[in-house]
Amino acid sequence: MAFVVEDGTGVAGATSYASEDDFDTYVEDRNYTVTVGDTETALVRATQVLDATYRKRFPGTRTNGRDQNLEWPRANATDDAGNVIAADEIPVEIIDATCELALRELASPGSTMPDIDRGGQAKRLKAGSVEIDYGANATPFAVFSLIDGILDGLLAGSGGGLQGTAVRG
Image (cartoon, rainbow, N blue to C red):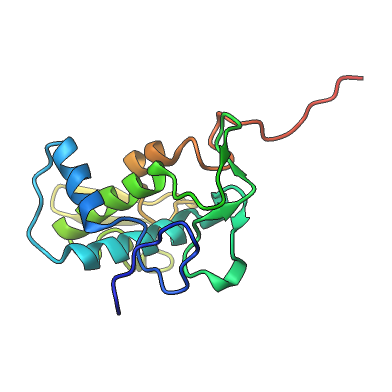
């Protein structure tokens, strides 16, 4: 698969929201240590994870509908403060979240979207002094607190934006 960065036009074959330069700048600005690996592959995986995890909470609709490969750019999108996100814009939050996820992919390939088999009825797992007890409604997916924080201002239902209208009679 070719490495193609989304440029805001809804590229049909785009595979990443962030370029290698975006990634290098993100890492340098935060003084992260990068595990050696294939940055392009990590960025592609990160983009897939981002779309798979958050697509239902992104505002607006795909600018080019099903003709574009990725979820961004989006038409009729606003952030939680009501600021319009241009239909040809890839928000910095999306690029930063992609870079953060790629960093995690480089450190441990496949870790951002692992296949999890909790064994159906299993409620408790124990190995030595480590014990995991899943609640009945526990999600089988990883929770990315930092990614959630990066994307907070873009996601529907993230707390800051107007989600409905109350009418007092």
